[in-house]
Image (cartoon, rainbow, N blue to C red):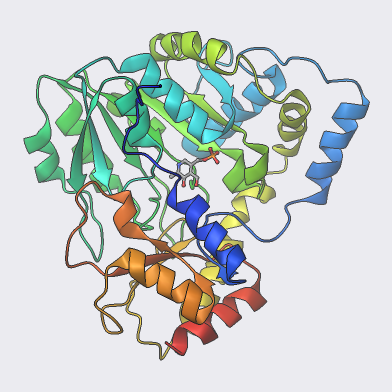
Length: 380
Ligand SMILES: Cc1ncc(COP(=O)(O)O)c(C=O)c1O
């Protein structure tokens, strides 16, 4: 028999809710993926690179043209230079980048500070390395970074801190002030940071994405992780990247080369070419802002309470005026009785706040689906 390394882990809530949505033929606003296609030009580029015979292993660190495109974009957007030869790695999605960064850095009994609710792939990776996750809860309704609590949680064992902005599942966004304060807090420590920035281009109401790369004291200790899946509506291609200073990248690469070795070659070449079209990522904001606005306008008059999300394609809805049952039960009830699937956010916490009654809805969906969803939600 196998002695499970993750004894308390079952299938993820995304698998469960998407499975229930299918079974009950419900509108699926649970898992975070678009129900519309990305650019047909990008799809055709992949076909072209396949036809042209780019079907063998890509370089281990990623195709040079793609690493160059990532470096150029980082310079253009955030004004920071990263070296294509030794500071950028293309990964099989952000998930692999996060897993690889954690595996490269965390040993037994190292502590990693994670803000809950947190995307669900962080903790299992820490656990597999024998590390200890120290959760600090963000608090509704604004889920602001509790910097005072962070200071209290740092110890001589703290090896790593994981931040995520724009934040899944709350939609909260770290501000320039937050980043400056974080910089001050970490200045005299050796703490490594993973900055999960997969939603960097999905940010609303004039807010700016504050990438960790723009803060030198943080950038020098940071693995910065992004995902093409989110930016180009291709979550099924599982492709992303990690940028990090040379010394961190060196350790990252040691794990990466035995973890996946290299990633899908024709897809990388296609993305490198497609990235030259800046409008494709700068235009994302307006497209998702419209969807968010349709969704929250459509909810007008419903019993759900909410603060409009500032980033990501998720909107939290508070159902405390409707029911007092726990969120997992509420999510199941919505699928079975009302035909709409959402994600209960307690699963993103180690110690979920007892009083919260909150569900996460993904609005990366066509307008018709969003309007149907609003009609259902208003009827509850
Ligand atoms: C915050 C966050 N990080 C990482 C990921 C994983 O990205 P990928 O699909 O590129 O592995 C997701 C996907 O939903 C996410 O929401």
